[in-house]
Length: 147
Image 1 (cartoon, rainbow, N blue to C red):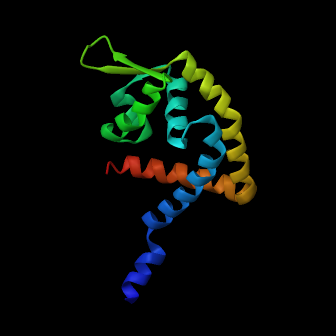
Image 2: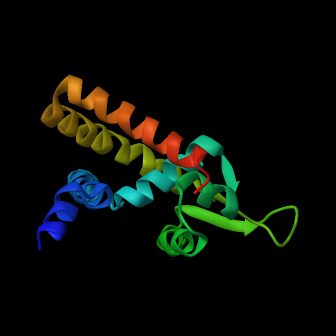
Image 3: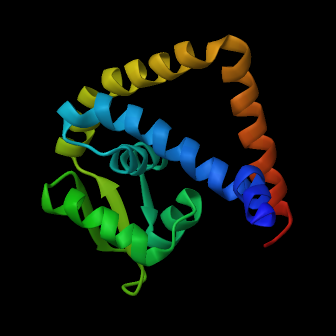
């Protein structure tokens, strides 16, 4: 029993998931009126920055397996917020924001900004900066370890 208490108290995965759920809850509340989930907002933001991307490229960028990516893209495509179309190589599928998607993303941005500000105010400047630094360092180290 003592061993499992130590696991529960020291498990990086458990701590990250708990924090992730709490942070997701904040962003979900702020984005709710936009009709987007935090994941949808992130995917659409990536597409806005990239212009368009292959399924493979977007999955890699978002650190998602392709099945999860496809599941998250379906509602966006159904709502006309993204388009999925064949690339130059017909076997490769491209994804891009539609004009409607760009408008929805523009309307959601102030809500995301409020979520960011809310979380930053909860943490305070020092913890906010430390969180970003820590997450960047951890992500880089894990990627470099080549799982």
